[in-house]
Image (cartoon, rainbow, N blue to C red):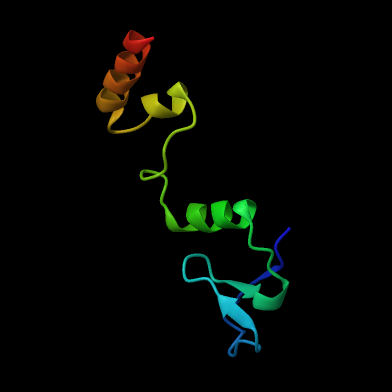
Length: 81
């Protein structure tokens, strides 16, 4: 797991070799972070809001505002099989 600390209002200064996430106010230890696909995925999820994130299932697609476009894309994919 990536070392992180949630920054509270009481934290005034950032220790050396630490960074504060702009999206969720977590403090990350630069020297201890393992930058791999898991870390990259966590960062991407922090940045992208739920509406921009691609759905992982048809059920998730059905709950989106752009469901008609997803339905059309799903049908086009099924027709190509």
